[in-house]
Amino acid sequence: MIVFRNARLIDCRGGPPQENQSIAVADGKISAVGPAAAVDLPADATEVDLGGKTMMPGFIDCHVHILWNPDPKAVLPRPSKIPLRDYHYFKARSLLYGARAAKMTVEAGFTTIRDVAAPNDSIFALRDAIAAGEYKGPRIVATGACITHTGGHGLESDNDMSIRADGAHEVFKAVRQQITAGADAIKLMGGTRPALSPPFRGRPGYTTEEMKPGVDESHRAGLKVAVHAHSSTEGIKYSILAGVDSIEHGFPLDDEAAEMMVERGAYLVPTLAVNPAAIQAIEEGHWTFPGSEEQIYRMKDFALESMALAKKHGVKVALGTDAAMPLVMHGDNAWEFELMVEHGLTPMEAILAGTRNAAENIDLLDEIGTIEAGKAADIVVVAGDPLEDISVLRDQDCIKLVLQAGKAIKDAGVLSASDQ
Ligand SMILES: [Zn+2]
Image (cartoon, rainbow, N blue to C red; front, side, top):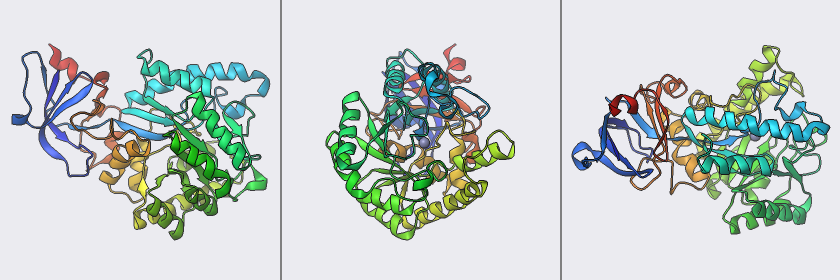
């Protein structure tokens, strides 16, 4: 057992931070939380004085593609860069890359991610190998292959990352395939990407009628449904009416769409990092945006407007970066906390989006997302006060300790100094 003393605790249950808290960790779980007098120190326990450092739940990123390399200069593994004839090689390289990206991600304090489009075999293998303790990485909630329509996003390279399905029956069948294959959640491409699918640009991908039976089937199997809804407000509304659980990207939002999301309890996963990163990649000459550059600047405005509408209406927001998009780096997921604050959330709202809300969004709130007795000991200890300066969460020198289910993933002198 470890008993941490003198923590400044942001437990992410919704209240303000509490000073001078004690947290006991045993058998991979948080066993007690409270003022020093309320948390005993058994004879065999190690006592660690945090000296007022901030303790928070492990961070959660709801939108990652862990197998892809975000470096636009890299040839591999980037799905857009590989001809079909080399596909098996690409998949093997992606899996090896993913193991490395997983390590960078968890060391940055992101103890859980949701991966929202990858070949079933690769991502399920990585998920299970990490869960078995064979590799360092975040707990992975994996959708496996996404489900998309003819001409839709996800089909840019014809491969195992997507299942093409048109009409309610095919979508329903694809959902059942994914449930059978071992998916933890379902990803539908409801809206479209603006540039790569010109006939569908700005139009919804799926109709409500196409999605609903598949969404209902997912829910019967206990799986949440995330929908890529981008560049089409109508696509967002169609998806909400079909009963999906989260809208990924989610711009442009309007008042009606925001109200519909609140009414049905759907989450917005705004993936704010994508636009500034893409602009940087273009401006530095590393990347050519497949559409017009004007579109990417407009998307940045859409993201600002959508976040303002989400806040105005009280839409639930969960953190997601889209790490793997150009220059949205694995291990730099905490940039999204900063961007959320730049887009109008308070630091505490941003922190909740990346902990408690994210856990609820991926259906793991019973296990993770807050610091409470009985939950998994997924814990980050930070030097500095993220409520004063959110950027400390992104600064790897400030991330002093990362525990995942009680196991030290990163320890910059917190446990090691106390061991002696
Ligand atoms: Zn994505």
